[in-house]
Length: 145
Image 1 (cartoon, rainbow, N blue to C red):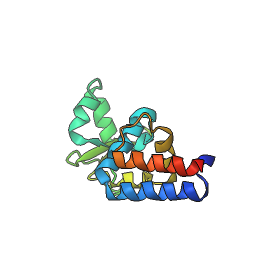
Image 2 (image 1 turned 90 degrees about the vertical axis):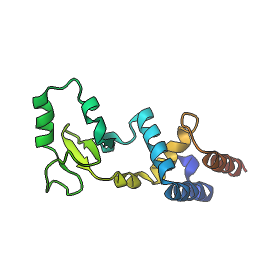
Image 3 (image 1 turned 60 degrees about the horizontal axis):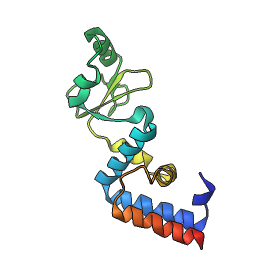
Image 4 (image 1 turned 45 degrees about the vertical axis):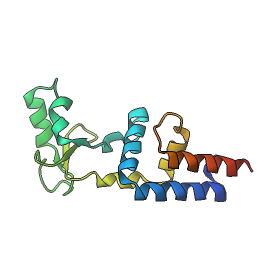
């Protein structure tokens, strides 16, 4: 973590931001996806709506798509069930196979100190709510004191 977010003021800032986003799920998911678009923050953990599957593989052959599904799995059951094309979401795992998911709840795993640090350093490149911008300004004012 960056030295700027260490200390009592930095830890309070991190707590305030994580508490805010914990109470504002849609906004958290939106900022997380903005960060992913900017620097691939989510990596292979990015989730897509299942209806985008055709668009995602528009230039792939049917055999390639079927192979990705065959070697994929249902992410809700961790390798115990095959890929489910009726699920709400899909992911691409680290080796390119399809993973089905009913939820994007695993995004909550990203609401941590690293998320706040990245948000802080990308603050000028992200669309943030007025409340989050005010928390950032308050942090900067307190830090300068």
